[in-house]
Amino acid sequence: GAVVSQHPSRVICKSGTSVKIECRSLDFQATTMFWYRQFPKQSLMLMATSNEGSKATYEQGVEKDKFLINHASLTLSTLTVTSAHPEDSSFYICSAREGTNTEAFFGQGTRLTVV
Amino acid sequence: GEDVEQSLFLSVREGDSSVINCTYTDSSSTYLYWYKQEPGAGLQLLTYIFSNMDMKQDQRLTVLLNKKDKHLSLRIADTQTGDSAIYFCAAKRPGANNLFFGTGTRLTVIP
Image (cartoon, rainbow over all chains, first blue to last red; front, side, top):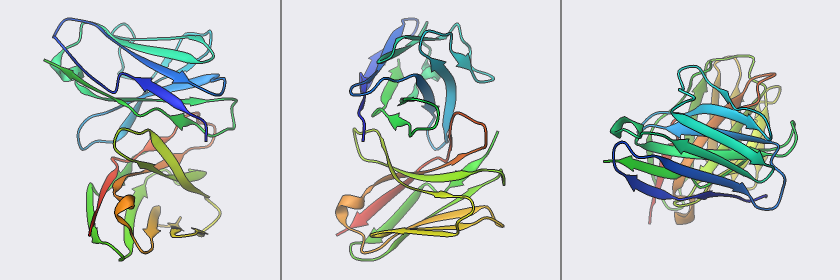
């Protein structure tokens, strides 16, 4: 299948700082990218959906000013956790899809720890 | 939204069959998926089943769907140590872009 690369795989940051997570589609053009978050022992929850060149659509309860999503090109989307707090510590995973009725491929995820 | 539930852990002995179970709440879900995540890797699509099917077999994998009970299972025959991973169940609702995931079940295969 196609490859989606997510970077970094692990990051530790101090409270109050911002962290950027990148999601790249390596061998296809990702018209749509999804960002998910998973808290321990809970489901992967969709945070937002982004289409290339458009503003992201956030799920209810997800603060768009805190979780900035940029999908400026067909191969790259970024998620920036701004002013991170310990409660933002979680596993973040992206997926990317080419077209509307095609399979979405997942990155390996990013374990964020805010200390 | 939709709630998708799985048990968190499963341990089996090498060579035995593994059965991972999943329940979902939205009866209109059209596709149901099983993903595998190995350490440091992304979710890999293993198999999926359309809602008008009740069984799908692919080599060592058998998916059973009980649409009345909204219950999905993944059976892995002759489980190997390389099958140790986290398995996610996911459901797709009609018209929705995204998938609704369960918690993932961590399968540990004991040699």
